[in-house]
Image (cartoon, rainbow, N blue to C red; front, side):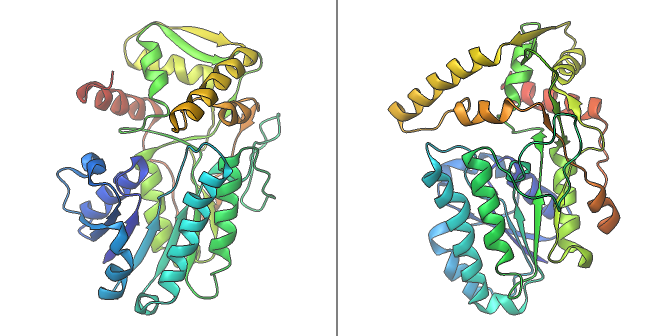
Length: 327
């Protein structure tokens, strides 16, 4: 089978490519900058220039699956998110719908985000796929709009939408900060009420993405893919420390202090033209007490469940960071 994977050089996308190849299938990855290929080193994926994507699709009409992971997780403003997450998705769907690949395409999978739905109630009640979308950040808003674009093509193409929660694992840079902090015997968390967060290990997530792509029951559907039990973020940091062999203390940071730091991140972003990891819209998301979702629907429809115990997932992640000089 032939898969087109956009964003294949990124964190989640490279794991998708790795699993596709491990199962003996073919993966084609559009690439804009060949300097970003480090995550695909040693893999037999076919890389093509993103500028030649139209020719690739038209020249190879026997395309079975498209896994659309590409997009922006950071941007200076909504326009940046809109172009990368909404318009890029629209152009790809229009290209597929108007090409010969439409006749062979078995599924188009959009990898969206839990942020498209917005936070959960403060009591930790799980959000379900049928809940109304209430994003609280520009990133979440752009993902919600990308989902709407995908649904508008449901009569032309077989589509599925996946909403991952917080994802961690080898090659991730967002949760890396927690692993770095525990080396100083500190587990950072927000002061006040404990934050409850749904989470998933990247290898479990990509197994779910492919299971959804292959499942007839998932056509036209949307799914959360998350561990059955959410984590208290303070306890997650302490677990990371324990697995890495450290005794850490919770570092409780007032939300007000985080807002000041985020404002500085915004300023640096405007000066450098590059959005920072820590910025105001990120703090807006972190200010909510609960980001909890349920993967029961995925379990019912295509029997997906995460298989990696949390301790093992943390250890595999820490070992990868250390072996690659990230810690």
